[in-house]
Length: 372
Image 1 (tube, rainbow, N blue to C red):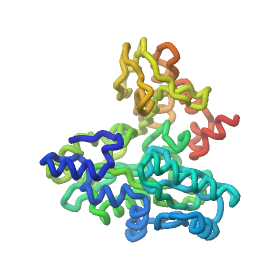
Image 2 (tube, rainbow, N blue to C red):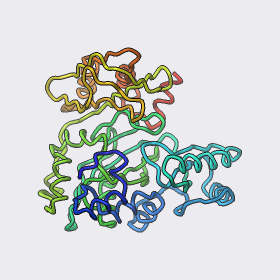
Image 3 (tube, rainbow, N blue to C red):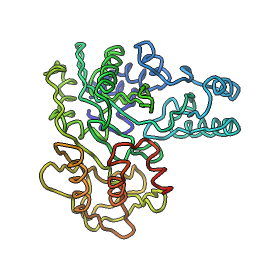
Image 4 (tube, rainbow, N blue to C red):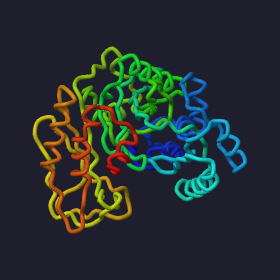
């Protein structure tokens, strides 16, 4: 059973149910998924493995008084996160003491509704940071490799819109330390399958563990494009009981890959989803352009699910060429339908922004972009 990258992909109860019925769940063992899917226990496990963390609470913060005490210890700004959160939901940034209690209560209530788990934790918020994540593959025999890192700093409401590999303007020594930390964390927790270890990189050049995604991710194609490794195929091989077919020295990163998420949203109206009938859908083509999509002419975008319509991925020998190729691909993309809008033109404008082109951007880029 391959769960994709939806909610079932990180549901340990579902993985256990599959095992009880004699089915092979393609993902890490349920106990590993449960341990790493819970951000509180994941932070404790990574601390034990020697990975750096931002100042904050390792255990869940269950009441306002504890939240006040932790906030006094770590200082402001801070971020409140749902222990069971994911997909950019269940988070609130708090910049001053007066906003702490309402933010704590709101995040707790939201987490209870979204994830049936109201537990939250607090950690120091790193303003102006970059979001860098490492793709790993591990088998059931203690072998683990990384497939380089991805920069996912272009986000709105903590959800990624543009991803690229390798992370630009990241010193080689720092990139190596982040990659090694991800492998160390995977081995320390008995991870099996494809997974992603996510980190924040501060302006001071230090990095901090954030969370683990126990599944294939939306942005996995960029890692496939720069390594030539089919991650989904490797997931099936590992789940079938095979050993990894290659070691770390066999993984070679070539060129640059960029992915843009084409969401059925209207950026001019705060990224409001725009469900409706797709009357025309023409994806871009050409060499080194890949499109992953379920859309076509006549497809009706439903209002009930995530608004992701397509992923456009390009590869080129260098970053400047990759940006040019992506902009050409976005110009070729045609999605037409009454009331249907997409993020394509908006992302083209982001790609043209000097901060992105010069790789000086961070996770607040789109906030600055909107203000400008």
